[in-house]
Length: 301
Image (tube, rainbow, N blue to C red):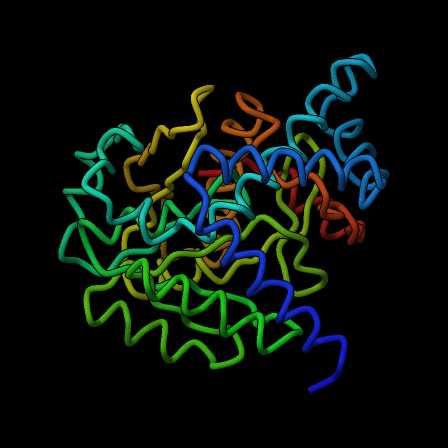
């Protein structure tokens, strides 16, 4: 192991141990302070400012800066809450921590293999962990560059009841999980380079992973969107949508249309609570060709 990886792993273990020893409220406050510090240091700030200007050109700079300030604090809160993930997911106080909206849509797919979609939006880890109360959940995850930190995060997820399927292990495990009637959770809201489909996101073509839509259409598993939205008191509203459907699901372009549809649902949540979405990533980094541009203008559904 490289010395830098070892140092990062030790720092992560120490931070999680310290945060885990605090109350949830104090851990959130520590996360907010961390977010303020990262923002003051300017880490990824220019990327976030450019993204917000693209998404909300009608806003003045002051409004976008206010959203950005709240966003850095939310990123810090979510980071701090990894140390409390098991307790938040399993505590008898869970009903007070999370208010469940759309529970009938989750109950309707209970005991069936399903594709659960969200985004890098508030505490998406808690979304998966909380849904394990109803059904086994496996997150599809991209391996981290630091194996020790990855093992630490995997242990925290496992303690909260969430399984992990690494993207490098191939799609076979995804299909096995669905056959075992698990809910397989994806985050498909980051730039997919040339492997993705260009679909509209805030009116601009964005390269988006097509894997979740392809898996859902190939297996017949329902594709259901879910989101955790933090309230002012620090607790959450969990909202689950009814399954997304497209016309002519066997048509050659159905995967792209379903990808556009789940992306539009995410956009609606981001517009309602922009501070909760991850603006620090270059979402529109890959630019479409003329052919891609034409495809991205097709309507979803």
